[in-house]
Image (cartoon, rainbow, N blue to C red; front, top):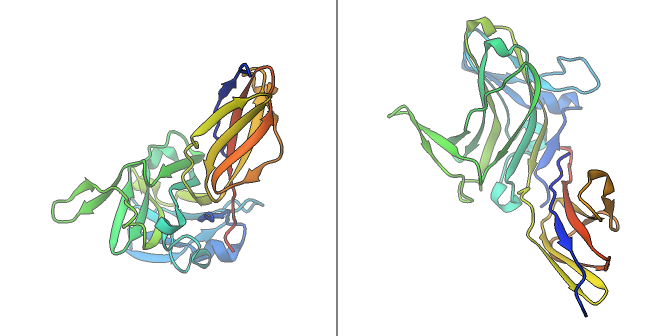
Length: 272
């Protein structure tokens, strides 16, 4: 769960559906994702639930010093994670990854296949074994294409025209040496979300009321909170959480003075 906080001091005056969420709780969904082994240039169904727990994941193992990919295509999770990202206003990727042995691991990156072109994020350098969370913005973080002739990466911003036809999305994992052979890498809680940037908020007062205005987007639940100081324990909800798309105005009773903030929480819609 990720919260976005905005703080405003108010002093009285005189007079999209979300792209989707895949927790891999269902074996059928987990094994519908794919595992590509660079050592053999072959793709297989992803393996499911190495932890043998009530919170399963999908995983792959390294072969020698070759990398592996874990990804979704049209066959994965009923095609929930591919298609027209531009129309769905998909901007953010969130997921958890597992590295069994950081001492034999090099780096990991997101990638997408849009049209006939592969696009790659900046690599993430992981500092410890076990689970960690990754996040990427398609619009704000830099992405790249690889030129086979020059054998170099070039910047390639993911403009909407590119994101109209996403055929694959996943992660590439790279070991640091052949000592990684047999070591596990995994992903869990894969999310596609709209832009999680804080909405621009306007505060106005008149007589004994305060008006809180902002523009909401589909797929986000908003909660207005109020406090007399910035101590974390002092915040209380003003009304119930709500959804709104487009311009929103909330009229509240005026307090002597106080702070307001907006909590923005994405809806996690599980893949069918």
